[in-house]
Length: 404
Image (cartoon, rainbow, N blue to C red; front, side, top):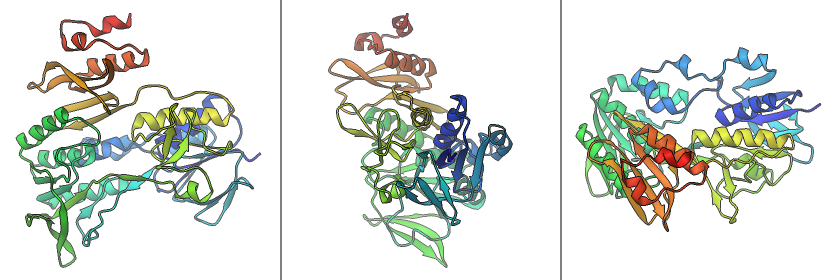
């Protein structure tokens, strides 16, 4: 029996493996990870781990012994280099080949490189893996001038950590507002005020032109308007690129990600995909990429079930979160195309929620230090219930009552 083969040992890959066992599959399950570590959580890397509040052991999702008890064969430090779909075989980087009955591609994503000379100076980092986080944590001990290139989640989370460590922090964002790809202007402004109030310098419309080095080490970051920012540690956080090359070379449909349906099935009936590497085709034919813990988890469950010939579509509303300083931002839904926003609570207090509507229907909620609003929101979306803008704005109205 060839069994099930999973390429990628992150959350999506681990979820596929464990769901296969939970659903009663008794054949061989092999989990391939190109990192040396057993599966671990990534979200704490830019938060608790860098702060020293989360130990490496706490990041680990499953020790190898637990996987072995479930008869999941974990192979670390090896990647896949080719898929032979006709023979249903995968070639690994160590030269071995593995046959499969079903294949799950959970290849994740990689950091988008900074296309400038000097990007490889010592002291310039990206943050994607545990090894990246280890290197940054060590460098933070002696670094004093920190420059963050990119005002997205990762960059701002690291900026918050660095300020809490009393470092000098400058955030350089090419757009005209922070986190522009994922939050509307109201939330961008809140976070601009939050970071500046904690002593970080935030520069918008900042086009980086050069990374200046001295004896092979980063010394400063220059922008096109002639400004120069001293730096002995630079974090580049300008996005990620889905790892689709393996799928593309095998002839699978790829369009900004490995194209899958609601159950994680690719264009090959024997192959599924889950996590950051995917682009899901929606009912209207459009494609959607999600980069989140929820997506990896739910797609992983759907993909494993599909490998067993069953239907378990991923239908829940998308949700995300970010921790910066003492503020937890929790998001549910997608704000694209909203035409009305109402706030619930006092936006100046740091504890409020923004409710976004399109043509009178609720499409997203951003909650800041309001976990009850977030949890209610997820339930509202899952039940297809849309409170009116007036109900959402009225703190005296119990939105939970709509769920009864």
